[in-house]
Structures are given as structure tokens and as C-alpha cells.
Image (cartoon, rainbow, N blue to C red; front, side, top):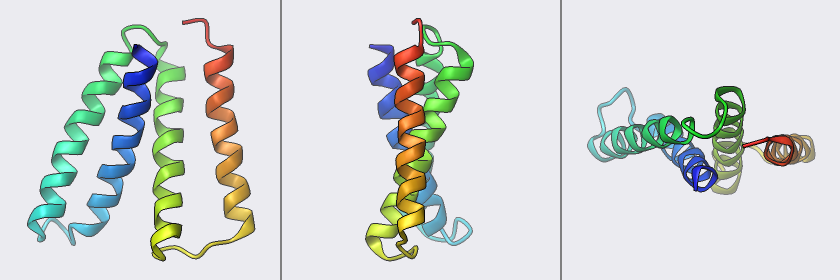
Length: 106
């Protein structure tokens, strides 16, 4: 269950990171509300998962999921240019996250 919570928390990290970029310095209400709610839920889930998963592994997986999804979403929506190199780097990051799960002893 800790891994499911960690994955959902990583997805929520991408949500709050994307929303933060849309707040325009916290001057836009709904992106700010989404940022705050996703941030609290993401951090809460990360903290909960760390009860069963080591800090280093949990944090690396959380960041990897969030970073990968944030960049992928930005490329899909056109906010970021798409390139083969970026796509390969994202795949490498995902591979590292999966590797951490596979070698973890939790």
C-alpha cells in the first residue's frame, strides 16, 4: 500500500508543480487553490509512504514521478518544446524510478 500512496503522491507533485506555474505569483485563484490542495496531499502521502519505504528511495521515486510527468504534460500541452533527447531522458528517469522499486527491500 505504501508504494501505491507514493505513486499517487508523485502524480500529485506534478499537479502542484504545474498549478504553481499557472498561479502567476498566486494572483490566480483556482490554480492557487489546486496548488495548495495538491501540495498538502502530495506531501502527506510522501510522509505516509516513508513509514514503510526508506527516505532516500521514497524521495527519489516521488521526485522522479513528479518531474517526469511535469515535463511530459508540458510537452503534450505545448508549453515546452518536444524533442527526442527530452523524451529519452524522461524514459531514463522512469527507468531509474522503476529500478529503485525493483531493488528496494521494503
